[in-house]
Image (cartoon, rainbow, N blue to C red; front, side, top):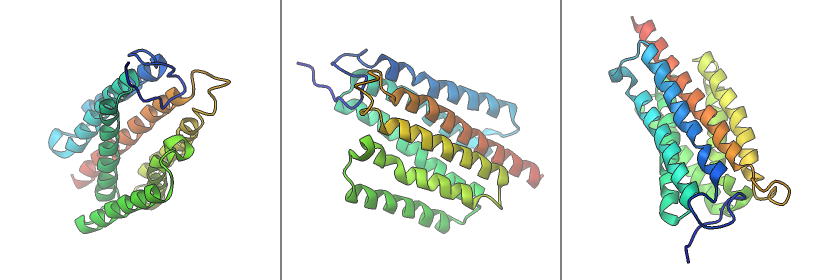
Length: 222
């Protein structure tokens, strides 16, 4: 008998296409990555100064592929292909926003990153992992996104607006992720597929905002 992890409303059996909507909507991450790549190629940002954008684009591709495999196979090995690229994107973006957006020094960036990690651990130690249908895992990221928006208001207003838009989008997507299991009796497809679509918009928007911030800095230097 095939063993699978039943985490989402749409899945009712084992098999590679037991979550067709959850699997297919990961294409949105690929499309978002291609859009950021398009914007980057039209900018004056070269690879030396825009390498972090290349890294974020790569991670967006990895999220799309990894999440597709996780929802297709729903096995313990596949969940790591889903989780690791997401964690890497969050951490890379946090460090980059602190360094390039707020222009913190390296030890301040490390302190900010460490505070985020501490908040993650404290939350996970004090709340069950299935709180809000597992969305508790993302609450430190939700909080960090809002705080980054506040911190950028004076030093980078355009970046702040992008972060606030991202925070609002993430609020909606988190709510949809959290009610997936509860809506199964009335909506068998669940709501997790909307988490994919909204988060693809979120990551694409955040990456473009950072790209424009870097391009503006280069124009200012010259």
